[in-house]
Amino acid sequence: MAVTVGTNCGVSCRVASAASALVAGGLFGAGLAISGMTQPSKVVGFLNFAGGAWDPSLAFVIAGAIAVYALVFRVVLRQRKAPWFDKVFHIPSRKDLDLGLIGGAAIFGAGWGLGGYCPGPGLVSAAAGHSSAILFIVAMLGGMLLQHRMAKK
Amino acid sequence: MTSTWWTALAGGGLIGAASSLLFLTHGRVAGISGIIGSLLPPVARDLDWRIAFIVGLVAAGVVLAIAAPSAVGASVRSPVLVVVAGLLVGYGTRWGSGCTSGHGVCGLSRLSPRSLVAVVTFMLTGAISAYVAGVVS
Image (cartoon, rainbow over all chains, first blue to last red; front, side):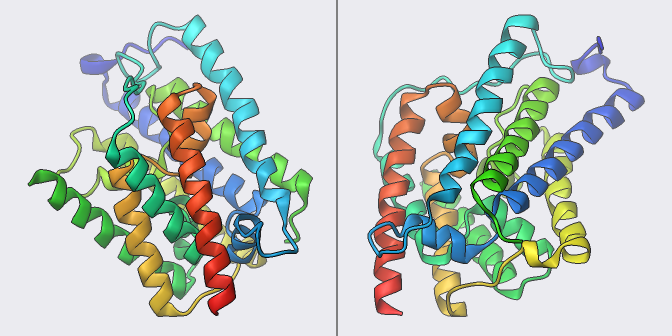
């Protein structure tokens, strides 16, 4: 499947591009649900290994995801000069460890352990109509906006 | 849905396949917090694939609510704590350039040192937070 990319992307190409991202999002959401990540009680039970009755099963989620992605990522990079619908692969190149990375990850973890939602499962649960997840997503968007504002200063 | 280690593994595999598809088609890291965050000001220029991916995630939630409602569990905290959790997750993922998907799946697969540090950090504070919240509530 050789699609000419970038500025040459016509209507059908743009439709195929959006459709592929839509399918990826749908599969991602299904994977989150099948894996148990949309069960806040399981997530909290997994993170709370100091609290007794530890539920380690969610460790297999990241193991399964990395097993597939690590392989396909390398094969795609070796076989192709560019993705189907873009001119280049967008691979993060930073190697430095800064305060934002560590402080941000620490704050994210605190929120994840508290609510049992990370962004993907939170959004899927909100779309499924759970009022607490909707509340979580609204607050999360607020937290993101706040960070964007502070980063500008 | 009672999730065991093998449903966790299979679901994880599907997450990896979905992330692989996004990388093959768009060359992008499937980082949920980054994709959502770039829809907020300052808004990213390439919105098409971002919006399409989010619509796919939302569609999965809607289908689940109809086809497998038990796959989405109830919240374990009070609404006030859920709001606090949301603020922390939103602020932290943007400041830290990623969440469970971007750093956890894509970053660790690339053997990124930044992602490894981020994952160790958020697993550690997540464990502390889940423990403290469990003791207090």
